[in-house]
Image (cartoon, rainbow, N blue to C red; front, side):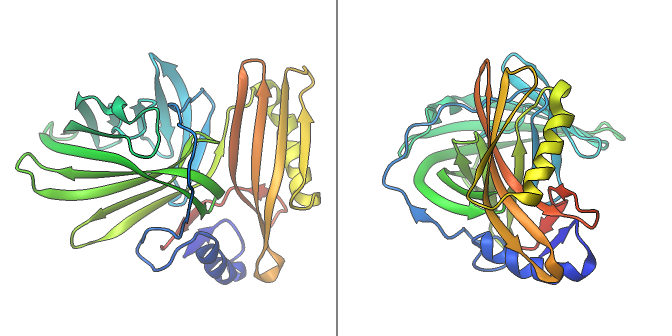
Length: 306
């Protein structure tokens, strides 16, 4: 496992530590260790706002740049951007990279999975069309999806410990031949998928974890909040909550430091949860940050290898 952010001597310690805290059992992306939960409240569709940021274990970083007609446009690290529905189960309606454009058309009603609770299920069809920019070549494929919210669990991943709904989807072609299975572990508290796993025959599973989710903070107070965040990460003990209040008094942020991890060479990482109280409601975030060589607490750039 590799985490890119800190000095080279610290990597060996991070290798072991993050392998343990992420709940991994074996390399290759096996399903995580989990504690069964008897019941969880039904979860509604997640909400995104311009300025929301997500960080993932493979180095991918995303930011919401626009919301229109209930769909969010995300700008991904590099030149990729895509448009997605609030229902994270269905593929993005449009994605554009430097090489190709991809669209997905949905037939059926994936909204059957919402409100999300154990036992709900749904079937729908996804038609994917990809066009290569250089040649103009188009390819269309069809997949029949069968999905179910099959478990409520408590899992530990890079971003922290969460109560989640597990969604399992199987995809097959128009002839009914199995192609792959996907799992989403959705944490209603922060309205984010904290873990995704893709499995297919004859290939190693692919695992992607959320490293951090940061709800949008008004630009007018962002610098002030970042300074506060750095100070408490450096000085406050785990298990404590600290409140920050914007000058305008219409925004309060409570940050709870949930865990401190000491690595080799006295390198530290910390997990946190944050709750934003604004005039238009409450939103929550979570994640991991590590102290770099300059003493700044930052989200790890890349975590991989399991």
